[in-house]
Length: 148
Image (cartoon, rainbow, N blue to C red):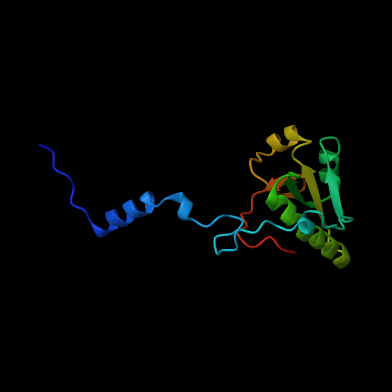
C-alpha cells in the first residue's frame, strides 16, 4: 500500500500558490505594483544622428574592411528591442571617435537585409558587435554596459 508523503510548510505554500484563483490577481489595467509599463512611443521614434556610422551591405562589406584597419560592426535587426536601444549609444560613440580623430570606424549591418553576411560571421543573436582588425574578426568578450 502506497503512503502519501508528509506535508511540509514548503509544499503547503506551493499548493496555496497554485490553487490561488487567477481572478484574485489585479487586472493589468489597474494601477498596481504588478503593472509593467510599456516604453513610450517617443523612444521608438527618437531621431538618432548616425552621420558617423557606416551602413554596410554584402556589396561593400569586404571592400570597406580592406580599406580600414580597425572596424567595429554592429549586426542588428530593426525589430529587436536591444538593437534599438544600442543605436543611439553606438551613434554617439561613432561621433566621439570621429571627433577625437581615431582610426576606428563604426559600422552597422541590417541582419534582415543581409542574412548571408550574418551567417558567414556566425551571428545568431542581436545586436552582435564584432571588432575587426585588418578585416579579421577578433573575438574579445565584453560584458559591460552598452553605452558610449
